[in-house]
Image (tube, rainbow, N blue to C red; front, side, top):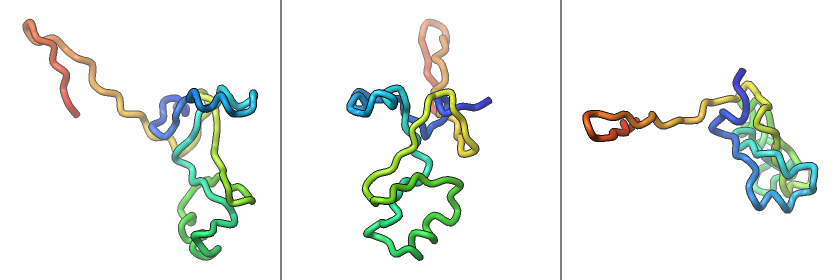
Length: 101
């Protein structure tokens, strides 16, 4: 099963997350799900609906200030995209070679 910890859109907790309330300090952040306030000052409701029409999920905050999806690395969703992992270096003769993508 694929999980958020393997997804290119997920970021593990950062030191600044220590400012979060205690229950949320171990949660990472999802950057794939659209984050918006229902009172977005930059969009009319019709424009916002159009921007979000193809999204599978949205994090919304009624105040229009801030919304974020936080989850543990072992959570998973249908928006998963594999993180790019660079190829392991290999030895050719006496040289170590790293192939570029």
